[in-house]
Length: 222
Image 1 (cartoon, rainbow, N blue to C red):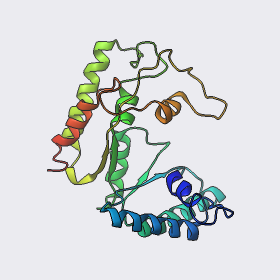
Image 2 (tube, rainbow, N blue to C red):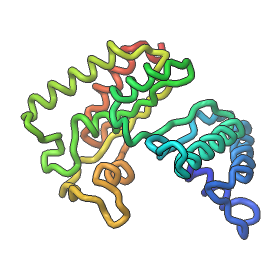
Image 3 (cartoon, helix red, strand yellow):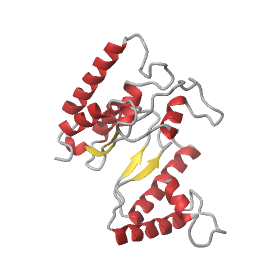
Image 4 (cartoon, helix red, strand yellow):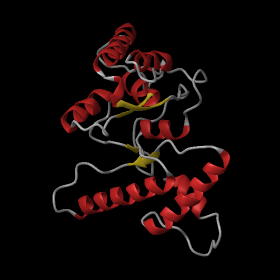
């Protein structure tokens, strides 16, 4: 929610900083944003990112904090007028992993927030390689074939009502490639790529159309 924080810290009394865990203040800021949106005829589609939720041991302070953050996000969502929260995952990196979780949760309000960058950038592309493509035991032709197969599988496997959101963005082919190691802030190369090198579709090199077409073939947005 960096945009909500930035907005809150640039309004009114700037001597009092809005902190990430000050949910009373964040609710007030979100209400102000909703008023501005209402005046312009806009609506908040989704609140994001909600991260670092899963994997904490029962009884740990991190787990308690994760649930406190989630409850705070729910309050902010209500104030902002949205019912959708995008949750990032460390342990479920691709859509097949997330779909497996969705089937186990089996609730109507739990679904997939899909992203052309995360899928194509994880299954097809690699910012640390000169060619820009995944390089493992497969050749480029097989990588392309497997990508097409994966997109076709998505189109068949996911019911349209379980896709809640589709984000479409491209990525630049990195020249020179990014170093395959964490930077001084602990960010891995794909995280750095995601944060700083994601242009609009057709301005990069990812096969965004393949993935978007597969999503639409499910009946999403019919």
